[in-house]
Image 1 (tube, rainbow, N blue to C red):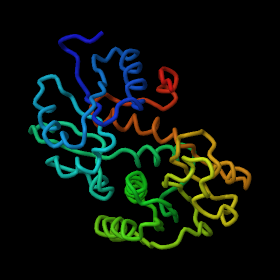
Image 2: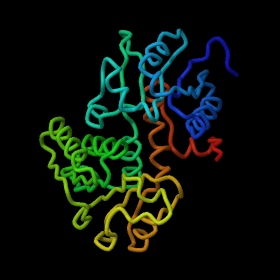
Image 3: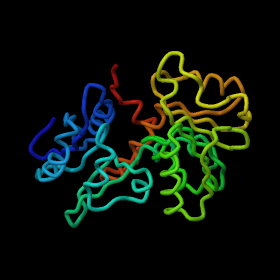
Length: 277
């Protein structure tokens, strides 16, 4: 029941028809007796700069979830930005600070990292390869650095994009070893497909799976199917792995903590979620 006391979390993006978050958050709020609602709000890119500040003028606004195409633009529109969001170059959550200032953070990578740790994979001191240095790859790299990995290898067909991410990582984490230019997975404890490869029928694999050791942990961000061709090939080699949707369910507890709603587990969220396609 939405009433005059309901806390509003705006879900800002365009178009809205693919939004899944309301079908996860809202059933959980209802189950927990929390008077809050995630509301999709379709905002086109050309209107976003004017719209975001006005949303936070609402007296019942509690925060905003930010999705495409606004994550990068948000970085320049908030007063304070977490280190993770600075390194990622994008933000997907905004809240009002105690002083009324807008605070931005990025949780795509946090969800990925929480999932990997929950599955028992050690990240502290690990060597990790991330293929894809776009929005999601940058967020994952930022959170891996925060988690204490010793070395990050970055690859993207756009070498300048990978280089810019590497520079941001080195500035924020001077002790981190960062390399670019190769997607050879040999010798890494964790390898990640953070590219769109696997979204479309006939896509090539993001890396040479025959070079992945069976003890390597493999991560995927593509959510089109649970077991993508990349994960199927890694599973054949005996690798442990994480599917794309795990990143979504794992980041929601981090969002809830950011917005002051306590926390939960991915299993509790999955149990009440009402996702439809």
